[in-house]
Image (cartoon, rainbow, N blue to C red; front, side):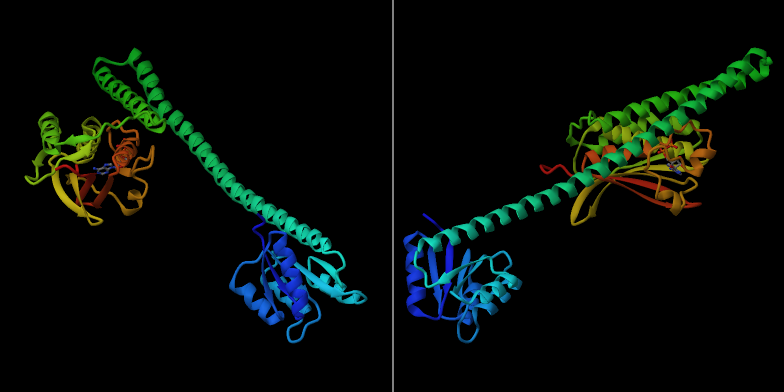
Length: 384
Ligand code: ADP
C-alpha cells in the first residue's frame, strides 16, 4: 500500500478527477483542489507528500502556487502540469522551484507515475540527507563538548601533577636541610631540628594520605555505603576523642546536639572523616584561648528538612575572596600558609567531594576577626 498523499490542483474537473482516480488506482491517497487558492489552503491545513498543479488557472495560477510553496514548504515536491507548446511556462515554473513537470494532453498515464515516483524518491533522499546532516551536526556538537571536557580534564591533571610535585618537594627539601643541619648541630638546636623533621614528615604523610583519598574519589573507588546514621552518637564519640587534644591547644571544644535530630542517610566512616577534617582545621587555625562548637541541628533548605552538623570557631575568619577558592584542591588560604600546621590544601576539597557523594552540600559562614562556621547538610533518612 502506497501511503503517500498527493494533492491534485486543476481547474478542469475532468482532468483533476482523472488524475486523482488514476493515482488512487496506483494506491496513492489523493485530494483535489479546483484552483491555486484552494490548493494552498489545503496544504496549509494538512501534510501532503507531493502536489500536481496545473499552470494555467484562474485566480491564483500554478506559477504562484509554485512560488508560494517554495517559500513555505521547500521540502514539498511540486510537479507542474502544462499544456504542450508553452515550454516557457515550464521553464519559469522550474526556475521558481517546481521539481518536475508533465505535459497535457497526457497520452500515457504511466508518465504520471514515473514523475510522481521520481519526485517522491528525491524528497525522501533529501529528507534522509537532512536527517543525517542534523545527526552529524548533533554529533559534532557532542564531540566538540567531549573534546573540550577531555582537554579541560587534561589541563586539570597537568595542574594537579604540578601541584603535587611542588607540594612534595617543599617538605622533602626541608627534611634534607634539617638532616644536614642535624649532623653538625649543637645539643640545644638538635631538639628544634628534630621537631621540624617530625613536622615535615607528618606533612608528607598527610599529603600522601590526602592524595590517596583524592585519587580514590577521582577513580570512583570511594564507595559510599549510606545507611541510617545517628549523627548525635557519631559526633559525641568524636567529641570525646578530641576534647583532650583541643585542651592541649588551649581551646575549648563544646558539643551541642539537637534532641529532635533525625537519622541521616550517610556513610558513618566518610562523615567522620569530614567532621575530623573540619575539627582539625578549627583546631589548627584558632588561636589559643578560643572556642569551637560542634553542633547538630535539623534545618530547612529548598523546601526540605536536612540533618546538619556544623563546626564553629572563634578563629581569624576567612575573607570573601578566599572563600571562593576554599574548596579547590591544593588551595591554602593566608591562614593556612601562615600557620605552622602541616596543611596540604586538600582537606576541604576532599570534604566537599565526600559530601557531594552523599547528595548533600557544605556551606561556610565566616567573618574576618570573628570566626567561621562550616555546615554539612545531609539528606534525612526517609524511614525516620
Ligand atoms: P589545609 O588546612 O591543609 O590548608 P584545607 O583544604 O583544609 O587545607 O583548607 C584550605 C584553607 O582554608 C586553609 O589553608 C585555610 O587558609 C582555610 N581554612 C580552613 N578552615 C579554616 C578555619 N576554620 N578558619 C580559618 N581558615 C580556615
